[in-house]
Image (cartoon, rainbow, N blue to C red; front, side):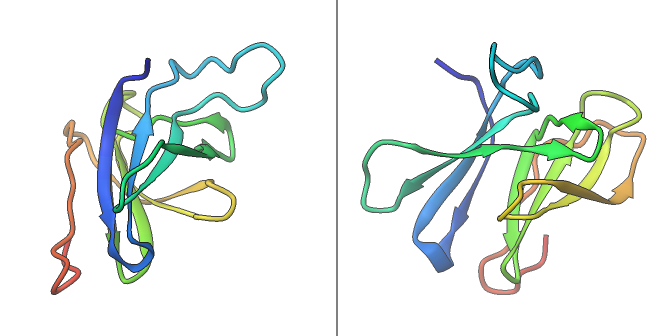
Length: 117
């Protein structure tokens, strides 16, 4: 059983995306570590793993998720130097830092009508 950290509605693809805490240590035989991203269709069904979220330096923790303008964003609030706001490439699941902050902000969301986060 996993610990869900962040979740967001992906209206364009009619699904809910959520991150599952991995503890950042990859299981034996797996590369990367980092939180795992899952999708569940709006119509229901079992979650499907989309893969592990990583940074150029390895596994990465994502505490909050939001989608705006077709871009997936994440917040990291747990490791000091990594605290910040990130874009997440939906193909590679690699994060790119947009802004760093000192506070522990984990919950983010986007207004579905305006796209404002």
